[in-house]
Amino acid sequence: MESELVLHNDNCRCKKVRWKVQASISVIAWKCNCFDYSMRGNVHFVVSRQRFELLGDSDQFITTYIFRTHTTKHTFSKFCGISSFYTPKSNPDDIVVTLTCLDPRTFSHVEIRNFDGKNWENFYNQSGIALQSKIHSTN
Image (cartoon, rainbow, N blue to C red):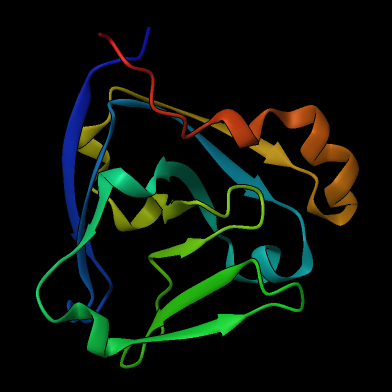
């Protein structure tokens, strides 16, 4: 059974990129040891793209960096450089939101797990991250 969902409204540092996401009040966030994420200190969690909405004219303030596989698409504010959400390789149909861009008071519990991005393929198969954003119907 899925825990209670709440609406999180947030933005990047300059507030030009704004979005909202419906997510659980209790989440599993991932801290990756790959080169890129280690340098940025990115801790994030996966949500269904259906529960994510970019607000207003935010899309005009976004630029995207696409990694070599063309699956991971990191979005950044053109003004402040913050990557508050992106499309991950682990869940290409979903969105990953950066935990520190959200108000921590809207969560009842955050569990941070380590993701071994240096050994991505092996760890991906063991981690269960691909199931993190699946919508469970209560009907």
